[in-house]
Image (cartoon, rainbow, N blue to C red; front, side, top):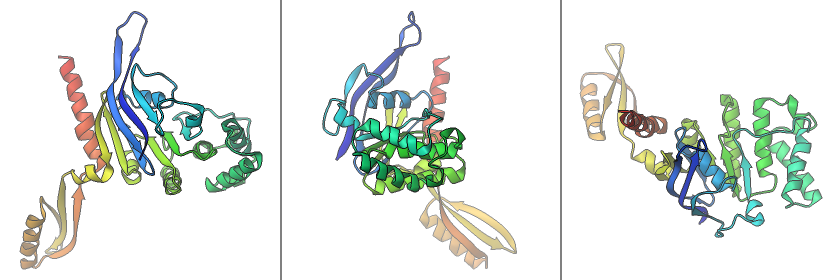
Length: 300
C-alpha cells in the first residue's frame, strides 16, 4: 500500500521578474510505501527541496497530482497524519523542551490534554531528554535540538514522517542515536520519508530509495535491488613468505582458482571477503559525475 503517490509532478520558477522560467521538476513519478523507510537522494539542485515543499503544500506544483492516503486533497485530516522535521527548524528558544512539545501537540488538535501530557513525557524519555525537559531550548546543543525536533514530528502520532536532512551537522554518535530512533519509529508502524546527503547512513537505514537527477527520477526501488546491481569483486588477504599481500578477483570461479594456487604455494589465507561498491561510490559515479559531464557539455 502506498501512503503517498506522486504523479507527473512539474514545477518551474522565475529567478527574476524579467527572466525566463527554469523548470525544476520535469514530471516526476514515485510512491511512498507504507511501513518502510524511504530515502530521498539527489545532488544539490536536483529538486529534492522543491519536491518536499510540494508534498507538504508549502508551494504549489504547476501540474501533476499528489495522492495522500488515497485522497487528492491536502485536507486537515491529511495534515494530522503527517509529521515533519525541516532541515533548518525554528525553535522558540525561551521554551523548555517539555513546553515545546506541549505547544506543538496542542496545535495538532489530535490528543486530549491528558493523552498529550503522557505522550510528551514518553517522547522525552524516548529521545533521552527527560533530564533536560525543564531547560530552555537556548541551552540545548545541536544534537539535543535535533532530538527534540524529531520528538515534535512524532508528538501527534502521525502515520507518515517526512524528515529533511535529519542527521545534518551531527557527530557520529548523534547520527547513530537518531538513526536508531528512526528505525524504532518504523518498527512501530510509522512510514518514513527522509532526504539525506549522508549516503552511508542512508544505505544502512533505508529499505527503499528515490533518487532524483536534474528534476527527473533516476531510480526508484528497493535499496537491496540497487546494491545487488553494483559490481562486486573478491578480496583475498594472505601471507606469502611472511609478507602480507592482497589481491582481487572479479568472480567466484576466479577467486576459487586463485585460492587453490595460493594453497599450493603454501601461502597462508587470512581472509576472503566480498568487496562491493558502496551506495556512495555508485552515487558519485552514476549521478554526480554524469551530471558534471552534462554541465560541461552545456557550456561548450
